[in-house]
Image (tube, rainbow, N blue to C red; front, side):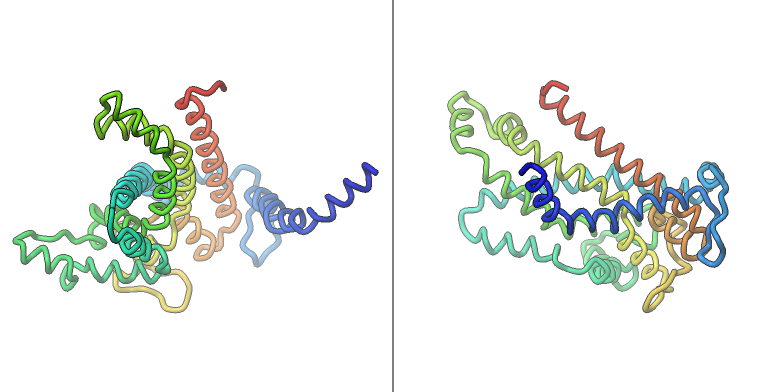
Length: 305
């Protein structure tokens, strides 16, 4: 009977297990193997040991892409979380038109990333964009946005905040789920608005903040589409259809993220062994950051390790 139950359970799990083996485990193990080889899709992979990993330490473009990606993680993730919390708190206090404003704020999240990036680049175009034209009417000289190495990454952050609706909805559900009795008890104890937010709202929505931090870091470590499209469009040399733009990272490599350099190495220079080594390093870093965030969350909440 026990064997029959186990076989029955295994039969139901078989499709999922097959999918995990074929689409996750096998590609992962293949990537690990190819990371120790010299491989270009045209010749038989040749074992080179740790050569690809040693090459990473000597690649100046790789380190530039790491700096850009870490900047995005350090700035974009906290700003996105704080903005989503603030917007959700604002919407939770609306008495009239709450559904309308929730829809308005959520709609940008439905825009395809490539189309949204193209539109954003043209809105922020230094010479003819409506944003700088509006600033000029106020007597303010607008920056070069995506055409400036100092403003390109902040412009990508603004682009990300424009599509913040998906995270806002998650935080809104968490904020609305805070028991009203907790706020009433805090008010009776003399807590003001800041104290109620600090000691009632934040501890209650802490799991959602952790979720947003983990998914945000993983997403930003893989930041690709918007950086590739923004750099290409801003330079005026965007490719059509598909392929690799010669202007990736424009301007001056400021939008060259780690995944963008990985893609360039693999499909422009055909160094797929080196690209697999970069992919494995990215996987290890993302996994390590996730574990650290989860462990720090336990320590922060006072739970025993």
